[in-house]
Length: 484
Image (cartoon, rainbow, N blue to C red; front, side, top):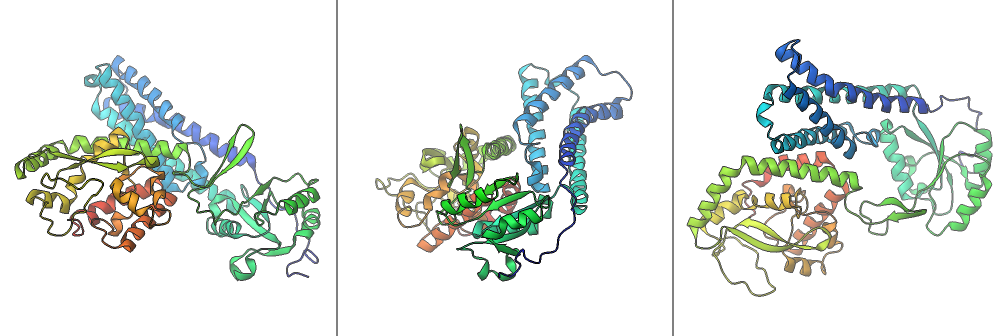
């Protein structure tokens, strides 16, 4: 008899059931709170500045237009979709982007209708700050309430595993380390090909063999919420037999496919019509994440271009004075999906003829580099024109650095999964660059390590990771000596 068999298991008493009403109330409360806070912040700021004075007609127009902008941006961004599955920092970052995008949209409208001069700046800034603080406070409070509910056994789902492959074990570790996700694995029923025997304490409790699952379900009705099936690929007959044995138990059943050996990159599940599909390789997880990243790019690149306009002029003059030729240097690079685009840089070398289909990387004391170009390359200021690439949509602020087309054609044959870098847009800075991997790559292992960081970035992407990379870029990359 297997250890932990259902024979001899004590009959458990009833447990606190998952309260769907509690989850629905929290989500409804979040929407209602935002519905109150957004206009309430505008009214509060007006009262603090002008007292009980009735708002002017222009303020009322601004109020309506801004509310409409917020409705549009909050409807597009995943503010209320799957918010409990995100971390608190990621949730607050999504809120910041959506709220900022609403004000950016309204500002565009105000300029177009020529009403920007009629808007009191104090009132608008106060509305932005107080509204953001209020909505952030509500989300922090809801997280605290969720922890309280789950500590009392509410809003928590108990899961039975059938089989134990690597993905199921990974899920078990995740749920054990993040109780805020509201799920826990009760145990698993063993099958041929399980990996638990090699994992020891890492694995959940074994409740018996797969044949004993119906007996367990009879004895413990109402004490679990879902069944997750984690069997070897090609076990279709075994899965059908197991499902037939438990079909009289109306419990949701989910299958965890083991695709770990397929070179996956952010896998996902999709449905076209009535046909389900498993996405094995893709870029960012879904369309909402891609939208968030695009909003992030437009906000950061737009602000950068506005704030750095005088710097652009000074650097352009320096390039022009250092040697004859154009200010900007254009080079073909591979972007999203492997499509080619023209990447912009401030020219740092003297104009010279390159051998066709060959790009020579800059090296230390390269005679082609001008005195001003050396300064630009050391400080990474030659990359600034790429903010225009970002605004145009061919690049992102953060992402894998784009390599020359000739280098891609060379390295894709030498490095496994090299072209996985192109599942996302290339970036001005990236995860590899803040780890010191930039500049010349004379050895293959240096490029391999750079590619590993690029793929790791795609897997781990979140708005907070982008903020971290941007901050690290300012401290680690600027002035770095590995670029020539």
